[in-house]
Length: 383
Image (tube, rainbow, N blue to C red; front, side, top):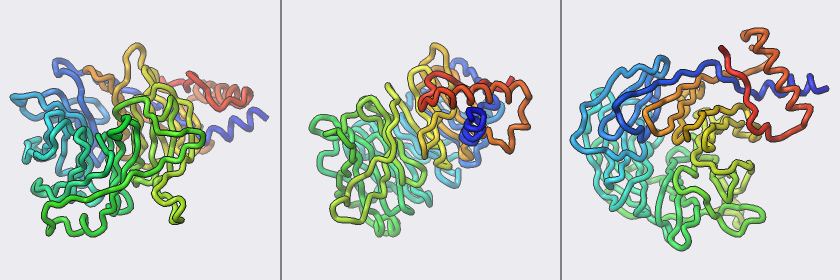
């Protein structure tokens, strides 16, 4: 029955328990943001300084002194132990920051153009960066010294990086130098990462991975930045291709005929996707689509919730480490902190009768129409 189907569907439903908007003033545009590992604070990169925002109240709890020149931050990463930050900038530099004092402790030079992506290895000892010059560079997090440059034939620019398989692989999403089509490149790093402290600077050659798309002859990417997103363990990849979003298994296969290829596991008809990210527990995927954010099940692609932003275009989204909060920003001075919770048969009694009735009615309608895409329908928020 529709009611039974709706009850079953509730196990895969997400509701927004609470939303809080923090309106910053006189700070300029928000360039990048990321949660601290304990989830208590959000690090926000502005045009010429950094600040911490309490993840619950939205209050500014710490900030660095205003710098003389704009930072031009394009990406930010935080060390797993929470003691260091790394920022990638459009002035070709990478900066390391003391997370407690927000002082810049090192400025890493090596890239020749804008640096789009920065990421820490799982153990926090290595910082990887990539950008418009088509190179991936590895640095020692302890002192900022370079020890490896990764290149691959045809790789023209890098906009996303991910360590995988216990830091033995590095994956890069980027574009080639032929027709600017999107792709993923891979480097194997077993001995290099493990013995990083004893290695002199060197170059490593990688390979381009084949993304298996049934019925498509190429990997034409419809947006330039942010369309490649890796799961926290690097085993899944989300990419925007020809007006839709595709999920791939990055582990490939050991057979010779499929080695060096990624198999597509899911295709979602999401148009004009400008940004995507996995939740840290890899259960959910969030996509920005102009004025809204879609939250979907990362395994099935089922739409769980839609967050509307009114007339503002959402430019950035980030999950908290426990995957319970989603922060969105439209690039201006406004940050929205959404607290998520699972709607399941075991916890539905925690919500008011009117709210439960509204959710049940929506889920029944969804089951009756047997629609895979609820479109713009979104579950009501708690008062």
